[in-house]
Length: 311
Image 1 (cartoon, rainbow, N blue to C red):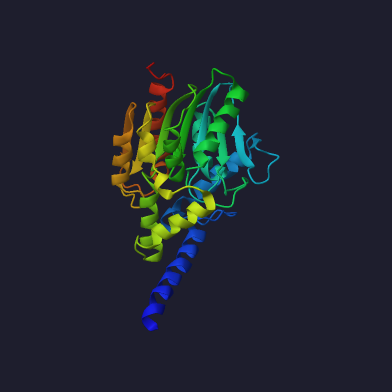
Image 2 (cartoon, one colour; image 1 turned 30 degrees about the horizontal axis):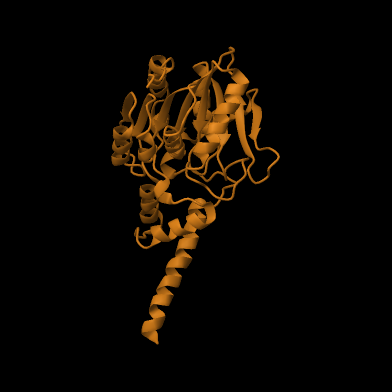
């Protein structure tokens, strides 16, 4: 009796823990979590950027506004001097568009219109579950069309993202993007969600990959309809031919250097990378905002006019 019951008890335990893990990692967030202890030193500067954004003449944009289950929200900030150059900024895990206020100010100072979407299950957007950029990449295709409608066919669009947002724009790179999308900047984006979740399992829960990640994957297939093995920046980048600038912290342990190498080697277009000394995950901007802006500007000055070669 005991020998027959033991596997059931073990399986039930794995299933229960996996459900808890899934809720922790994938359930929507209605409040941005506190930042990590090591980044508390930037809190005053961060809230200064948020206050700046809140005082700007922004517009609220929506997609699927009449569908409560699919409604997506974004904040649009027009440049001070009229332009058709626009950046779409993709936020990080459990953040929202407003948490990217520092990058919004940077691009605003560079003369760009700025669009700050809230991803599915974040901020003002609908959705029950976080997709780690996989389904969000398709939503951003709709945001691109909204920008083209707003600013005209001659608009030039930059895709920019940090952490999960970096992975989101990397995964967008593998889609059939319109010619208006000129280049991509990805700061510390992961190469695959599998590897990122393995790190989360070890760091936060001291749990091994097996059997928990396959169980979480099965839950996600049931709830969201896709396998986590599909969520791969490196695979999507194999189809990319647009210029891309990779930024990465030297001391990033959440998205380690191996992920940067995988993404950098995968892309087929013009590429540059900048490894920021002493920076941990998503810290590159905060260590030296002025130098960060200079590197971004140099890349944009070179590639904003880039057009894909005809096949």
